Length: 114
Length: 111
Image (cartoon, rainbow over all chains, first blue to last red; front, side):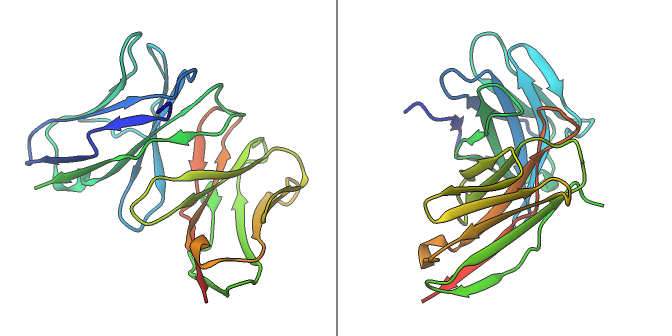
């Protein structure tokens, strides 16, 4: 399967724990995007990365959230000290070249904070 | 003004009819426009991309772009119940690689 791979599909964390969401882009894609979607709401841009670089993190909360896309391995979205308001679906998408090429989405990670 | 605006719906059309979905955007410099379909509980899937003014057809789908009016639309001909989903409009912003999504329009096609 050469699609965007996200794991885990479902993640349950207690308040105060850390959540790590992983994303492997499609083969040949070097641009990775993370979006958050609350129930019955649209996709909210969080961060855009290329290998080893954060290009645009204007949608990321200033505290507790971080993202990386190392030279080797998947992109990681990390949420420290989770709160109930972090419960959402987190989608990763990748594209080949950026602005002119469409995004291809993974199946998402559903985070539930109890 | 929101960067990308869509009517949330629901838009209800009978089977076989044409469904018309609309989207406006605020940035005159936007160059790339996309329509995605999202079924409940699933991830968005790409339907169409359009970059130039005018119409682009792909099967039962036609995307229309009018940059002067900052307006992009999606027409679905011969609507089927399986087309019932939320349709998301996405636009690149400020001549960047950042893609911003509208909140989506929920389409219901009834038999």
